Image (cartoon, rainbow, N blue to C red):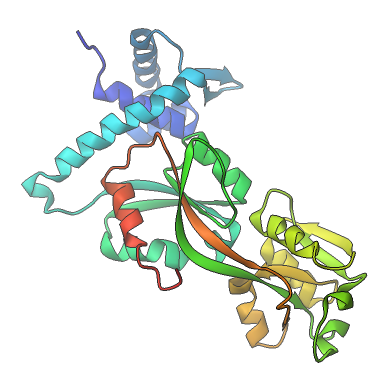
Length: 297
């Protein structure tokens, strides 16, 4: 006889998402002892512990990571069944956890989330912004439902879908000597001071690939935020490769100059990423469909 309950699965999902019994109890409007008992009973019935306990926080172990997608699938299938009830009037509800790498989350968030907000206003969205490596890790650990990144993702457990095209541009302060040249050549970049993103970001990876086509320069700064790099470039500290969307405002106001570099390959693709074991219920399906036919694709 199956003794699992929906409450136990909800507790499992909440603790996995929030990392603590206390926060799960607050979210589910239960007492902490009730959450602890439900989780302990679930582990007993499954014959395995699902979490490693460390300094008051719970981290999914190997068994938990294997069971979590199955538990979420059961819960989401139930929600999909309830959405068919006549009283729901067909409105899509629920919470979708979206991850975005820095360029997408800081400069293209309207394009990413605007369509589903317009089409399904009752859906709650939680957005996490970090570099591509960190977002990919959170997706693998089931902390996110879907992600959008600008870097290539190659992992056996992840599946990618093309969203839209994008490009980096080389930029400098208007007073930089390179802006005074009528026609730039690769040789003109010899000894240039570069300001780069931190390692692990897709922008850094593509920049390093582009720099192989140029004479050696000097890496002056490594910064973790695009805005910080942009301000350093405006201040005349060096040259940088930045997402075009991030430079447009400064270029339009004359604070930044975009350098013509047709000899560099700076085009890239933005991708939607899903965990292969993640059940794609109504929420994920609606999100993916909302981005189909992007005018930038």
